[in-house]
Amino acid sequence: MADESTQSIAVDAPAEKIMAVIADFAAYPEWAGAVKQAEVLSRDGDGRAEQVTFTLDAGPFKDVYTLAYVWADDGHTVDWSLVKGQMQRSQKGRYALKADGGGTTVTYTLSVQLAVPMIGLFRRKAEKMIMDTALKELKRRVERG
Image (cartoon, rainbow, N blue to C red; front, side, top):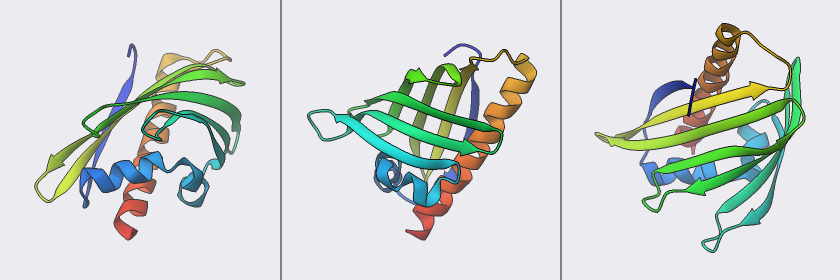
């Protein structure tokens, strides 16, 4: 992923539990503040989401977009890319989970290009804010069970 931002967080849970929360898209509106709706459009042979449409409301940034997911066989990585969106021209992301003592380090990588031009510095700052919020919300959801 070119021109991407990366951030990590330690979560006090095994990777399988974290990935189960990541994969439960229908529950995102319950814990991911900006996600108002998530609808799985298609699933792979293992029942994992292949395409998901999200309705996002993050204050001044609102969008409806569809992402395509690719799940690693080891269950520790998921990659996604934008299929279509209203405000985004492209989005590529990844959650990579790595066992770390009794917990797991979750690394989030994200690259977003908006339909409206944005200076690279501001775009990277916005990506970091999105990732920071997403990782903290994921950690809270997983650890509270």
